[in-house]
Image 1: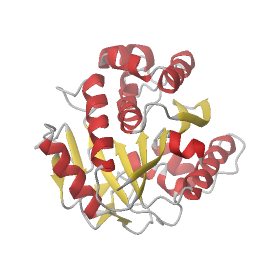
Image 2: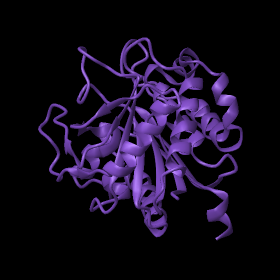
Image 3: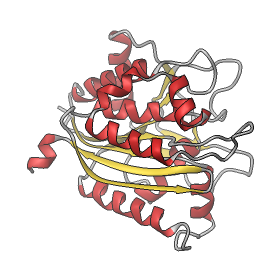
Length: 280
């Protein structure tokens, strides 16, 4: 049976991609963040995962106004690089894990999660901000799972938690020996429109990191409006962190955490180890 060996929460942003592609990772303002990503990569790859289940949100690159699912999963053999307005980044397609992805999709539908299934898909900075710095050579195939945080009506934080728990159960029921890491990307605080453009909320970011570490159940009591008020309209992406946290063992402990309020958002990385890994 499959085993979830790690959970990872991390911010995603085009700025991370620009710094990486522009070879600015050693610049003083970026080096602390990329050093933290290096630590995350060393830790993750030491666990020898067979798949990375990436819970993220699309940014109008795969989905559009004609149809935007609440939840969607990619089941393809590979995922092309999205053109986000400045030509696709110069990476080969990201390998998929169709067997695990199809199993998760089947289990979710069987248990009441009417998830959309994408057989052909592009991935954008929701995945490609962190992926090159936690799996530099595409050594580990991915299963992308998209959450709608763009267009109303959107799933509530409580619903995202429930779906995350179902994702974890589906992974563990996969009838092959597989080591799986679950990654939730997005957030933390940022506001990209309106009079509060550029606002960062370090106090709330740190409180969110504390809650997801120590009392994640309490986050189900928040609404999307709460998250928007506390961290900016676009901080609602933290529901993807919640889904990741719900997918892994409830007694998982924090292996490391890093927080850096910089430029237009609060950047953070946090790693969780399930109890079996802690005892190993």
